[in-house]
Length: 162
View 1 (cartoon, rainbow, N blue to C red):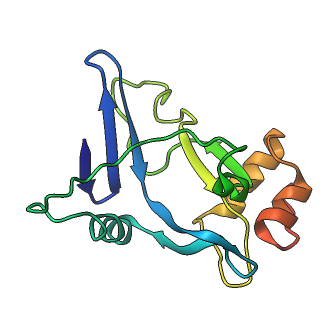
View 2 (cartoon, one colour):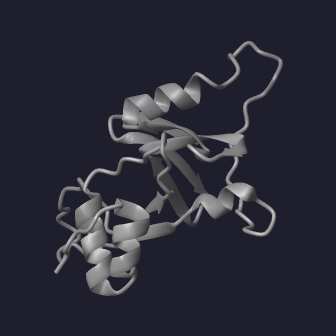
């Protein structure tokens, strides 16, 4: 199911016993052909309303004979040219959640179940990620990304994180 709200678009799923969800706050429109200035990326959309507008404006209308289908697929690096555009997927804790009385130690609030996919910068394409320096600093300190990768591949400039 899809839910649109102020934090983004939730894609939820479950089997009656187990449940999960994905909150979309940024999406990239891809192209079929590689371009030296943009890679496979055509445009980056960020923010709850911008993402919702981009996704829903590309769906068929309700009275259309064509059905709308949104699917999650596995990316096979051997057969998918877009998958080589991914530099790193950062796993971090969620943001903007309030404390819950039943979660005394903030265990669920602080679970690292937020994923951010980093794609390379090109001359005319730049992905913006709010708080990227802080996130990369955490990753460098934890040893999940090298200082060199954080500086050269993602930021494009020297930054001291320690």
